[in-house]
Amino acid sequence: MTAYAILQADITDLDRYESYKPLAAASVAEYGGSYLLRGGDVVSLEGSPPRSRTVILEFESMDAAKRWYESASYSEARPIRQSASEGSLYLVEA
Image (cartoon, rainbow, N blue to C red):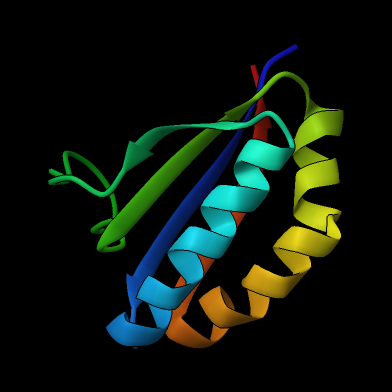
């Protein structure tokens, strides 16, 4: 089953976050993932207002998504994102 990685974040250090993006993109490609959504306007219809940045990645399976997240290449990128933003990242199986 297809799996999606969903990141919702508020960027706290834009320059640092910009340095994260190419590292993340390379790791996503390495594990067969693709970007479905990066940023864009968000309109809140119900509940709490969303974070300022939303990213949705698609992987062939939950195992592939977990391998990407746990990979050495994403392990290099992850702390940069974590220090440059506040938010959540989760996996959803479709």
